[in-house]
Image 1 (tube, helix red, strand yellow):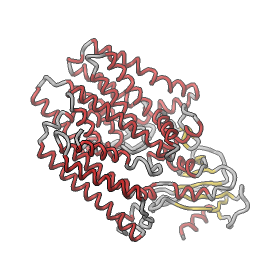
Image 2 (tube, rainbow, N blue to C red):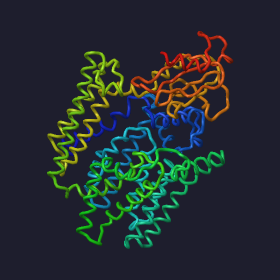
Image 3 (cartoon, rainbow, N blue to C red):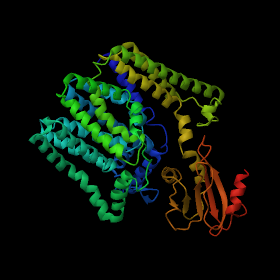
Length: 560
């Protein structure tokens, strides 16, 4: 490997680690995901995913089990949440490996490196590559299944084993979504392309079903034996209910949502894949290469499910990046080099600006003891944060900058613009997620308010919650070591109530009775959502303040 290649590998390694370790679980996804991991670590229970003392049946438990194992493995060196997040890094590396193998198989040696670089450099992938979410494992399952289909017409047993295992991994990550997407793609291949209408392909599907069955049956059977109602909640409500919309879970679909999202989410792989598709159809006519057939069918299967689902989010599009990057790898050499280099220069200017702003904010903060008081910053982040000199973070940021400069000087690879694109992304992300990570964590973490809250939870008895989100209940359990009972779903009467205000700052109604406000707080930089702790005098007659009725509390708070 050349010096430029080594610099690029080191830079991309720093990119994968920057933002993966060194901060608490952030809302919305990480907080509740780690709550499920924490329950496994505390209880050893894996059949029923549990969040804040209640069953949480959105997804099967494979990702949470893997994250719990990773947290336990690295616990002597790292906090549990950082160790758990390293499971994402492992699955990212596995996804890159199988994506590269698929590209090499379909388009020849050398294309695997291009596909891996494209995947790492894709905007949507970079957004979630450091996050504690099961969608990363789902994407890994797609990569394994996709590589299995690459062998379907030559090695049915190998293809079936990989395809079935990939579908099983995806199923144990997020339920029926991957079997549905891969199933549609598997049907489209022989329906559209004659090349796939063979006995070997049928044998591949048969072997795939055999290898997938243990994944598809083991946990659902265990769950049904434990509690048939929880099985129904997972199978019917969180799969079909979320897809068709009658469960009212997740964001609602919008016309052409993923058409708009993929236009930027898949950059630059999406443009290259479209270029390869158009050029292939124009040059090959009806004789479409197998790589184009398989990639197109997999993209179509994913888009059919995403486009017809009632619930949408950007991260749901992660799996489509695998076939897009494999297809795009065939166009890297054919894409106009000048155009690619121009795009790399443009992203380099943007990355340098982001890095320069990060350095500027950090230097200002260290000198003055607080962040610049700029409205665009103060609306989202605390300007009174005490910036300190962290030698490790500063050295990492300097190393990332030096590696980026060396990569640009060496320009590794037969098509340097692709390497430079990935390096630019690593520079911008890496500097921000080293120098400014303590500041971002201070704003996004629940540690400060919940550790302050813990000091006011010394009195015995349970604690009820009102309008407390899933991530907040999970972090209350992890950081304050108290499990809350949702007043919305339980009739249990508790002497303490923890309330979270609405997004507009208004307070939900308290239960009947006389309540005294004991504590209130919020995350740093949060201007709307606050936490309020109340005590009921019927359970705790000795208080430091005179009991107030619920309407009077609202009046007193509004005057503060």
